[in-house]
Image (cartoon, rainbow, N blue to C red):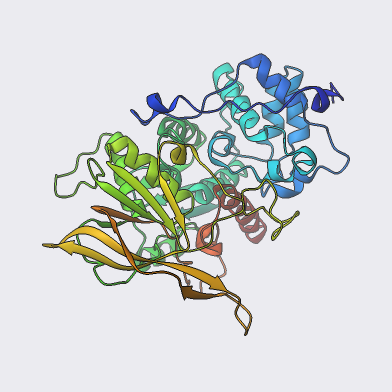
Length: 449
């Protein structure tokens, strides 16, 4: 702890976003970076607490006090060694993690100005790539083979961990490129896909084999059981929650990932026919769902040139924060989140139930909604929804369903088959999927030993 008074003398400073009028014109990353001096000052604010809750809050068990101290002292390579000891892909989490460690930071619990762990993490990793601190590992092979089905954050983390332990790992991916949600769910303005490609080149150089365009059926799985010593299933949560109300068949109603995945593919150079293209250009857009995926739809719609965007959520409006009296520490605060996409322009409404999709000649023209309220359930459990006011119509030529995903159900597998990430636990954070992948890889290692 180089400067024990830094947290008293230096205020939290975030890098912030690119100017709004500039960033909505392209899909480049919206987040900016601090210069080296300011970044080191931010790292100096970490207090090396006697009980560092950041360790506990991070699913990966990251140790911010250690690598923040190294960063403050200008020891960038040491900072990366400490960071990568627990986090296999800090360039991903440094961009898209909600920073559970910051919510648990003692400075957040006391003065609501936590250390900028996430941004520090990204800065350390970019310096490591830039300065050549990241070397290619050549593990000694142990003669065992493991198949990983799915190349999302959980699958990549599992494959990386097993590969470093000496297993010959083959990753099967149904899509044309690796990354899963990282590549096909998260917009480029949050995570440039060149960042994924850079890591993929490294993993391939270290010996992991990737087989793309292979969707593993039950027949193919039987083949895998014979050819590999263990199998890791990391297929995520592929089934989005639907909204089966009248008018669902109208042209213009889409799942959020249909838009997001296609847009990312377009940016990667893939072409689509005009009748296949999902675009918000010149249209009034309605996003149903108030989470991060809905926010990503808002930012994408703006960059496609939409006319307007409205986002509705069936649940009540979260508290303004920074504290959540109904969900106090050590629970994660359910406070109102305003993203860069929300800042770009959006009507946000809560306590809105969707009743019907309306259209003419098979095309969506609007959505009938109903304002509702919630009252306690006398029997306990989920509150009861009650109508409030009269139904209304929101004009929309395109609706994006961003209401989450269904947890997959699995049959009984042989003892050498392991399930990890969202496929095992349901939709969650990228950092939790990575942690699950690492933990599952260690279970595979213990089993095969």
